[in-house]
Image (cartoon, rainbow, N blue to C red; front, side):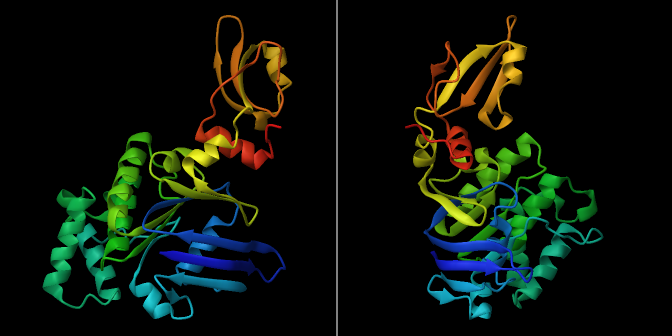
Length: 289
């Protein structure tokens, strides 16, 4: 469990990256959703003991960040930009990470590495050099290194950015499997990653928690504020891009899905909101009266 109390981070230039963050994250998959620049990576780096907060307290299973060695002993971390040694094989890389994590028993370390390579579907790539890996394979190797030592808490920052759809689905399923008996904090700006994997989430915007609750609660935020209508190209050009969720062309014009507090047109029909609708409504300050 991760408990975050009144956490704030101010940089030397005076800018506040985070302000008064309060979250309680239990076992399972918890989603941290927010646009780029919302403060997600700053929060992840604080939890990973790579940055010091300006104010507030964090406990990982009762251990404060002021005891970084104990925190790191129960933590696995996959940063947004995962660096690997391209000349090493997958096994050599994990063996190196295992030594750095203090896994001194060579036989047990080898057994754990082989088990993890199998779990992340890289068992047949253990002797292949990392420079030959695709983006998805490198991310799966990143999860394997984060899981070395069986951490109780796993933090992953924007793990599916840049992956193709097939790899993204595979990676989300992998994280879901690993969340069964540990706390997994998934930070992303991709709504679909949260929708298919998490029951609980928080939305971070401009360094503050805009909403915390269930996936259903975020979708319901846009209740009564989502519409579909068909418009001409001229009418379409009049909409604000931030209002439009999706479009599809027809023989007669463009069918738009729009987030708006009021009915956007005579022939607009109210539709059931999705998680993405709720997210866009929340960030755009749209709430049906």
